[in-house]
Image (cartoon, rainbow, N blue to C red; front, side, top):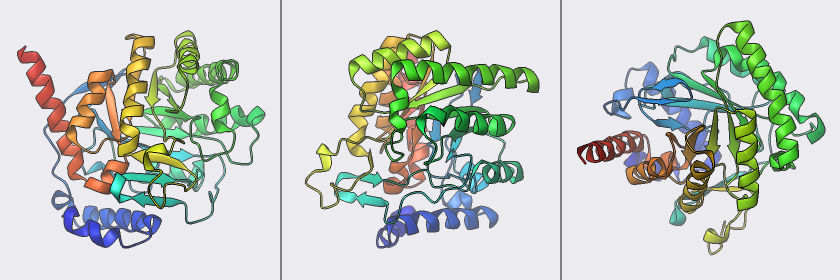
Length: 345
């Protein structure tokens, strides 16, 4: 179905098409027509950071920022869904246009800027949905919150989403909020994560359920910076790391008319860079911390390659724009095929 809808969507402004697609998925779900949109694959049970997943292929944060489409997205066959990034207060994000397709490169550039309706709206949407699968909630800070107060925004969100999430992802790697990536500096990161970890354990004790906390990192870090981040993650005991967010390196799309647009680049040009980070972090972390691989997955083999590089789970976003929901089952099936091939020796 998506093969003939996509040309129509690509004639529209990218953000308009995004909203229209989510509306269409909601209509299909309410009309019990989701089976015509995507056929879920046979499960590939997976365990990571203490949670059980029906398959290791999830939806990355950013597509459903406000958790307003959980039921429809949950019917597509994902093993888990991550919503957000959400901030304490609602914010409009950056001015439009702020989302750009580069079809020749199978890429997306975005400078959305954490546009969302605020954490209270997201919590209401989650509570009102019927989705019961694994749910990650991705948290961030408001644009006008200075970095020396940033931890307060993350604590505010953490406390409000904790009871509603299967896990929480701390996003300090978006390139579209000024200064956010500075929080990845070693000394700053250690203080920041230690504070959040203390809150995580306190909330777990209060609510009788410990929820895993993950950190989402950028693909543009140097090897020395990755060394430092790995040391902090191991020392502080973070449950998982998401590798990676979008890249500010637009060299691969410099020949495209839109290649110079400001924002994070995702899609095919991010694949090798993000998978390299997965591989490097697995080498640094050993088996102590789970890795979620995200970035540039446009076919089943890309997802399986990320698992081969050391990820426990993978996430999709830009690939869905170019391939549609059929990509989910394709990834699950290829992962299963490789696992069976490996088991057969």
